Image (cartoon, rainbow, N blue to C red; front, top):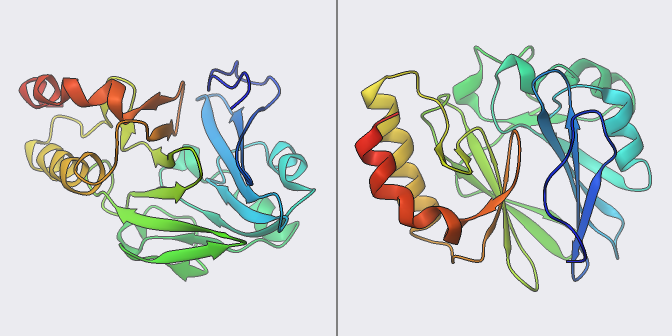
Amino acid sequence: MGDYSGQLVPGSGQAERRDGALLVRKLSVGLMDNNVYVVADTHAGVGFVIDAAAEPDRIRAASEDLETIAVLQTHGHEDHVRAWDDLAREPGLEVWGHAGDADLFPHEPDRLLQHGEVLPFGAFEVEVIHTPGHTPGSLVYLVRADERPHLFTGDSLFPGGPGNTWGDEERFRLLMDGLKEKVFGQLPDETWVYPGHGDDTTLGDERPSIPEWEERGW
């Protein structure tokens, strides 16, 4: 894993980690400290970008040595899609996302993703997990590698709890049920969590706090 910590200063360079042939590059972009990830098989030289958030030139530079299949959107909030048009124009990337966020996306995605889909890239696969609550179409993306699973959670899970549901009890319950069933209930503690903003975490670091989150209720 090298010296990777998942901590970045907005506007700074990128962080990079490797797990066998899996490469993860992390960038912090835009005024809201959005994280963009490049996920690739280094042997095949192919991968995905996760979230077309902002600063398309930096996203292009971070992926220029790879064949990028598509941009995978975690959800459709404005701060996560500001580079959509630029990346669609140059280098001509498709953008994929969930139909539940159709009203939020600036355009219809080139491909609509569903829970349980598997997206191959080289020797690896991205597993699509639908975790509605923060938005109706929120997705998290799972890649299993040699040392651990890698989970890209958008705004569904952060260090310290689930994403914002704005005091809506039904949406909070929906998000928590999805996280408990599809994420914490299926994946081991060593799973590395790459959120849509800020620092990384692991499921093991967050798991003991689930009762506190449920009591807190946001």
